[in-house]
Image (tube, rainbow, N blue to C red; front, side, top):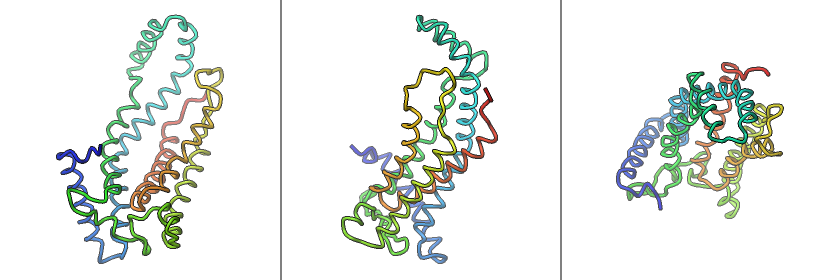
Length: 244
């Protein structure tokens, strides 16, 4: 069931759609790809508004890294008493004036915003009228086109433009994987062997999704993953993990 069939959510989606199309109309005198540029600008605006949540996540990751040795000691000391382990863990976080869920709240805050923006690019109709956003073009390719559909229909322009989006997303994923290569702390047996490889492979999941979604959604994804990489690099320097 589509949650945006629920009247209040449908109205919210229609409002976001109207705002995006208004921005597109404003940009039309400056570029033929006004709708594509509007998608990029709105995505940048949303990501900028979510910078505080990214900072909160970076601080939470730094805290978890700093507490990791002490948490491992507690796990070893109380491995046979889960209730005692839970009490001691919560006490450790209280002593640090922190919460083990500190990194979850930013994700919960941004999820509805990102979900709303992403849904704009997946619905062919919004509030009973056609989604004109998907009929707009980028370099002659409708924003409703998909790479899979272009391959099926033999559309060279669609293959090139949509394919380029997928390739850029994959390249950003590879850079992200290398820049944030997962390494388990020494002596940490909580994660199974191969967990680092799995986490690295997940960086390419977005590229796989981009094969099937409309070009407008692909633009949103490529801006999002690029912004996220840049933001993580900056925050990594601002909030470095403690050296062992």
